[in-house]
Amino acid sequence: MKQSVFRCGNWIVTLSIIAAAAIYLTLVWLPGRRTIKAMQAQLGNKQQFIDQATDMPTALVAAQRELQENEAAVAQWENAAPRRKELPTLYGDINALAKDAGLAITRFDPQPFQTHEQIREIPLTIGCTGTFAQVFDFLREVESMPATIWSKLLRIEKIEGTRGDVQCELDLVIFSNNPQNSDYAGYIN
Image 1 (spheres, rainbow, N blue to C red):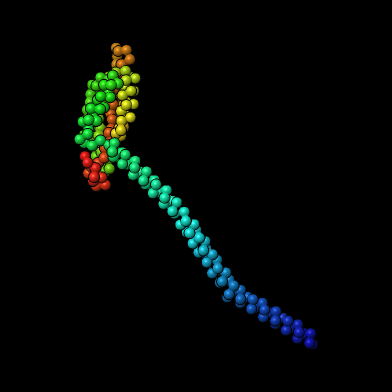
Image 2: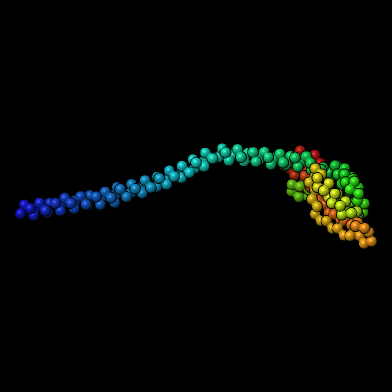
């Protein structure tokens, strides 16, 4: 009989331990584990933020250097961009380049300005005759000028009855700063 009570007591102790473990598991350990996981996630996020923050000075220095390079390029362009009062001289320089290349100018027609927010386009149509090599030399010299000049249209046709002469029609666009832009209020036109 003692053995039966002892066995029954063992079961009660065992069941009590299991019940206490289940209560501890559901009321203490699982909620604590969830809290620990949430804190680990927060810690990971904060560590990632700190890692990114330590890279910020390097990125900031690189961005500052790039900004300075861009500002220097813009200042260089502004200095080379022709002002309105310099246009007659620029037109004369282009005309002289054509004559130096050996071309005969048949048309030199400045067009009305096209003003945009930051820049101004100054179209210029040039007609000339000469050899293909002379046209090529002229274009090379125009592209090497300090002002920003684009060749928008180039039309070359052989002149009948000549020994290699061509007729050339060239639409150029000269870019200048827009003096009405408030960002460049110090820019003298």
